[in-house]
Image (cartoon, rainbow, N blue to C red; front, side):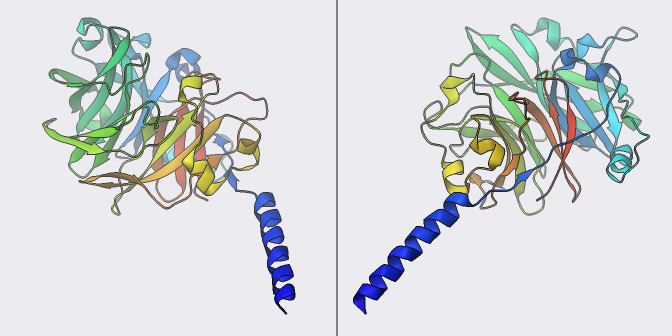
Amino acid sequence: MNSFIRIFFFCWVILSFIFLGCHQVNEQEVFILPISGEITSRDAEISGLTWYEDKLIILTQYPDRFLEDGHSNLFAISKRKIFDILNGDTSISLIPHKIPFFDGGVSTQLPGFEGFEAIVTLGDTVFLVIEAKNNGGRTGFLIMGKIGAGLSEIRLDPKSLVELEPQTGFRNISYETLVRTGENIVAIYEVNGAKVNPKPEAKLFDRHLNSRGAIPFPSVEYRITDATAVNDKGKFWAINYFYPGEDFLKPQKDPISLTHGKGTTHAGSDIVERLMEFYFSIDGITVSDQPPIQLVLRGDGQSRNWEGIVRLDDRGFIIATDTYPETILAFVSFP
């Protein structure tokens, strides 16, 4: 009897191993939205997305590349048109309309200015993150402004600038993500992995950009490049991205992959393109129990530098790339 039990247990272990080894983690397809106009240029360098009422605001890293009538411009798209496309209307091409953008001179007067990296709105107030060179490293700045009636303009207040001290000394690494939670704004650093940022934290501000201190952020590998707003359950989603050329960000082990496994395309590539859910509390940010949404990777081996994300009601997410391999606006459904 004991021999039978031992044989049975041995066979169960082997079968379990085979099953787990063959089990495939689902990946989500990326549905490319048809866009046209100036925003399709790789020079657009989309760096963030946010909602204002029923309009999707598209932040570009250098709005002054789109000069018109003496001012810079951001872009906006109607949510209704996005839904029309997702509901099967093949006659529509999304042509973003321009939003006059006045930065108060920060793009020319702030030393080391390297563009705008993130955006959120709270009522008619807008908040952006600026990246600037600082002795080989990068410093972030938080700035606020006002949205004109009917999204007629966005005008920043240079007097509101708040410096965000870097958490590492890496070049081209700064604060790339803003999250709105209630009446507060959270700035999240771009790299938080164990070997590159031993004590990651997020910066918390009220709606007037008064500091409310720093809160712990989890040790998540690779880059965090943008995030959605926090929902009524305290949850939000963020882009977690890795380009294989950035070896300094490659960990020996990725706890998220070890816990949840890899989908078919991720299993055969070093590229990481996934969306992760987090939980916000005033005591800190943690990774939720929800498995990450892994995106089906391109078949040509090119990674997509996702740098913008918003939640699209209960349907899924709108995401956007910055330059590489091209400008892409896309939809990803919830699993």
